[in-house]
Length: 68
Ligand code: FES
Image (cartoon, rainbow, N blue to C red; front, side, top):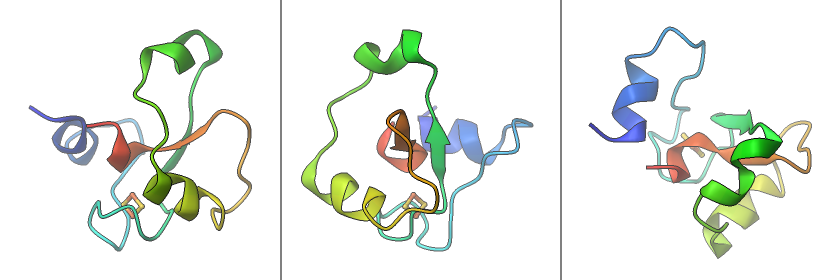
């Protein structure tokens, strides 16, 4: 099961946004706990570009659709 599938089926209140997981909308933004930041893949250019327009971006912001 991918992270995307887990998020779609989770009770965590996190969901995939209108772009369907294509790193384009920013609606799937999550704030990652600091203890997990170095365990995740690096932010690629397309994720960085969309995070640049994401609502209330923070230092620990990631797009959950990129974490699959
Ligand atoms: Fe649109 Fe992640 S679902 S950016």
